[in-house]
Amino acid sequence: MTLVEYAGKDEDDTPFSETQTRQANRREKVYGLFQIGYDTYSIAKMVNIREDTALRMLTIERCKRKFLPSPYGVQP
Image 1: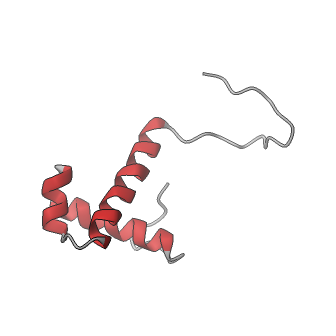
Image 2: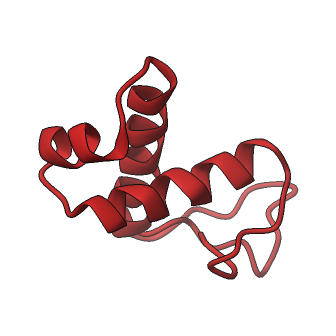
């Protein structure tokens, strides 16, 4: 797929990959489940991931929403 040039498009403007989009959506889902009261163990079972991965996703999304630096470094 190629992007069509348009007025105001930056030269270094690259779209997110499909994988990055899926990861962002998954992090949002994990964060949403945590907000409604589920713990990381329950979330991990629901999303079919390990608990440490759920905690990592939760932390990254929380930091992003609160404009805090992520302890895991730069995340897409």
